[in-house]
Length: 422
Image (cartoon, rainbow, N blue to C red):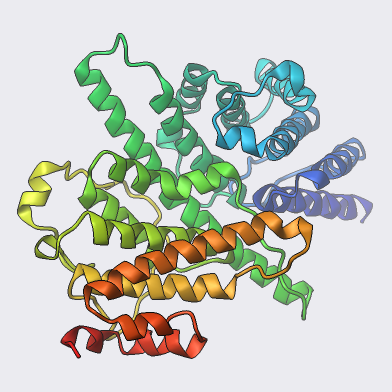
């Protein structure tokens, strides 16, 4: 009976480790690692039954080092978020947590005691470390060694989806930063195509991860903590990059078809709390493309195909891998815009509603940055609304937008009638 109790406690710790790695609760990992190692010493190990796990519990020392390395690196990245965002390499001599994480990972990989799954995880984490220190070739080599292109997401723990989404976006960012001075034009073109493919895969996997994470979190909360709201998941820099790099890169290269298709797809995916702000930005971005980069004669609706002359100018190699796709909004008799102005207006009205819902009005100093972001978002949305409604001469309606919530809903529900003229 004692052995069964110890085994049950061990499985509970393993489940909690997986949950914390998925939700990014890095402060809790050291304590859980100690519990896991203590349970192993008292014979509480045994067969693992969690999805995607190896048949037997991994070596507790090396597995513990792997977990501690990930926690230390993630804490270091959170402390240096601005530098990571500005692509400023971190110096290991100035970052003791990063140095300690490297030591743990090097120990794990040199020992080679862990099952292949965990050795692969160690490589993915080390690849991220190489990137943030500016060693882009080493990051790419580490991901090639891990074989990320061949990793399946079927029956894998949630945290592995996060690791893989981040790995693909980091690989793409690393490829972008390699010098082109000695590369042939053909090789540069191949590299650019590989970058976009990495970003597209990262986007899909990140969206699936966030949808599944919210589903699991909501189920856990309703089952164990009735009446309490689940903790909001804070997007890491690399998950944010995974969500937006594909469409940003395509549009920068002038690939309007692929950029618009990517934007429309991400906007059609079922929203999670973690993607709300991202969807506001994506909707504004798509509205800007529709207004500034596409004439009404060249428009194609979300349910139709682009004009053949557009397709002949761009690659038609949209992502075709058998990836697990995120859930999309579906339904009967859905409204479909007839031109770029209608679609832009629909996007902006939705963005305005979301921005008003999440607006920060508090004047406390701690929320000054959040308040500034809210103001910038609102200003950008109303600027684009001015252009959109101005093109149809709807100045009275423009004056009503933002005055009341009812005015916004009036505009949304009367959308098909706005373009018949006064």
